[in-house]
Image 1 (cartoon, rainbow, N blue to C red):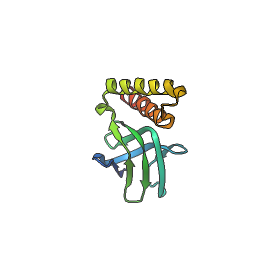
Image 2: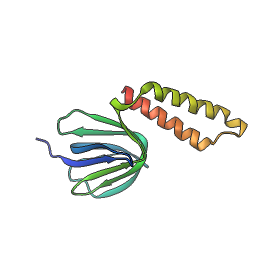
Image 3: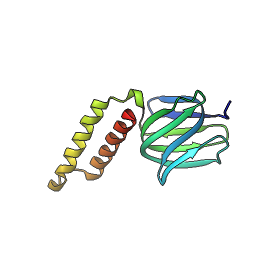
Length: 135
């Protein structure tokens, strides 16, 4: 049996996943990073991206997150995510509509009525949700 470590994926609303895994790949602020059993303690900011976990069972779990924090400790690893959705929970059609709305807002950027930063973040979140749901 492969070595494992405990992980908890949490948002303010719920516990998305809790259990033993053998690896985790997270979208760190400076790029993707991997965590395996015995990893050095770490706290880092997370950006919008795909969180990939490999449970002891071997079946990969994909989660779309929209930022947060990752803390790696000897006894457990914790992801505190702004939002988190497992691939099977994502409504791809809803994500497509959000993508189109964000593109429309960015197209209106020249009018000055658009909060460009917010529209870009909405675009990134929608693209990420679609990527996690479809791949």
